[in-house]
Length: 448
Picture 1 (cartoon, rainbow, N blue to C red):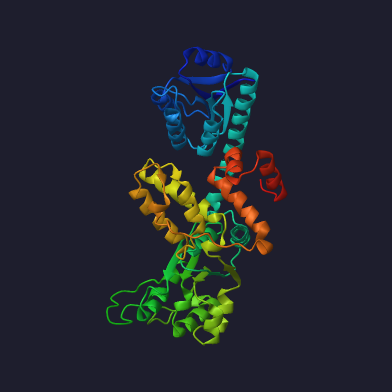
Picture 2: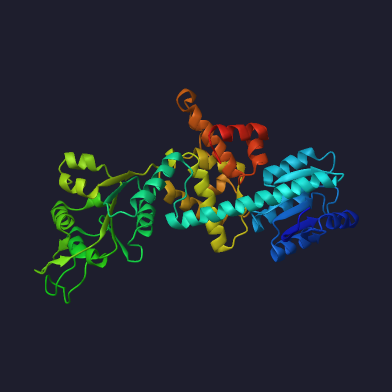
């Protein structure tokens, strides 16, 4: 065995003879031992082991598995990426399967065969290091895309578009339902642009009264109207050298659309009540939940302005059309909130996962965030249930397998892998297939 002293291995075994034997056998690792749940939890907090070998029968329940399952769940809550190998007796196959379902990496039946256990432990460390490298790459990507969480094909295409568009100065129009993440994408476009060191200035055209929006955008000179006691810079000026984000552009009054069009054509503005022309260098990003084509037809939105702001248009799909993104986002939002509030919640129960997948999410990501935040606050257990989320009566949406068989299989694979935190054994079990079959399907659909 090669020298692995940098890798911490935790052995949880109440049989001191077997514990000593395992500690001696794995001496090339940085071995930490524990005889019960309390010692194991302390060791996880202190040493942060990458792999844990754990006997399911721990005191005071040596003949049962209650204490072992409790440790397994607490260990994964404290260290979600740690690989746990559970040891069971010869008759413990059912318990081993339950442990895998709860998130353990693998299982091993006693009596101990050192060579077999060696291979399992080596593979566990190998997988841990691969996943750690992958997490580092994902964290870099996530920081670049500033909060865009996606695995759905349509959203991944949008992420790719954002990366290509961001370094340019092309005007972008983001179209999508309320709560789909238009502002998140606008932020990503800014953060990946050459203007990232300057401000991104946002204004919601629907939230400002019609008689004030012009002065908010263009600023005003002293004495321009009653109450204008000093000259004030507008949002467009504040965005000089940066990015101007006009949210809900479809609600902008017609007379102001003409003034905005002139600015976009000439890149100069005049403050309200002023005569001086001010040169502005800013990138324009607009967003709306309205159908601008229809507004153009009815004369409520200028066609020339539409083509000016939509040099590149990004259509953001609603959450209900984003397949496996629903569960991926739910887990991301829950982990983020649990970490922030230091809660003891581990994850979602099976009925909660079903509820998340089957709910249509009319409020999109914003609705999901609110439901998860409320559930996390109200939940008294370690797993959030469908009842906590208010999703107890969700009905399964019918599928037309003739048209979407491939998408259904891909989404099922993604959902199973996400739900099991990419534990292949657990994902295969939840899908009712063998591990080799799961690997074959992943290869078939080119899933890494």
